[in-house]
Image (cartoon, rainbow, N blue to C red; front, side, top):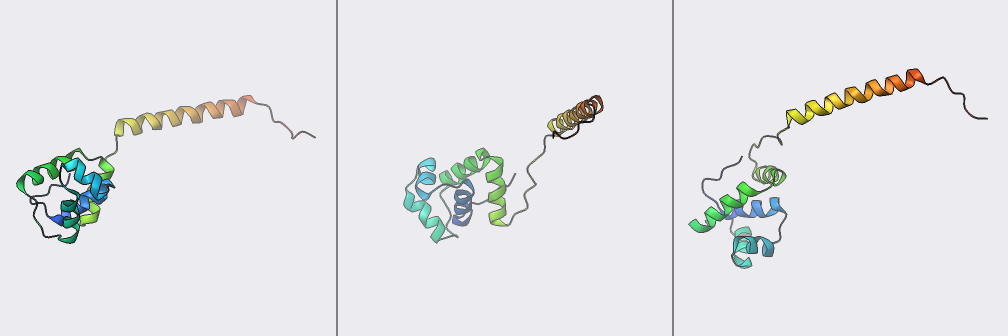
Length: 117
């Protein structure tokens, strides 16, 4: 997970974009005025207050995985790919094997059919 040591307007604006929120909805989520969010876009070096730093940390931590990946990409940070659940992949592989065997049994049990005239 991406960790931001010191949030700037650039980081906050990237998080808003990654979450696909409007300035108004992002401001409402953080409990601040929409104008503050607009300023972050206009002044990327601006440092949010310590309370907002914490709120941004929490928002990033609670963001869906795809939003965190978008956030890291917007900032040019290396973020690992969305993790794969190997247990689910194993079960899917097993199900595909079962399906292939069932199809093979059906094909071998059916007599050759000629097209209807």
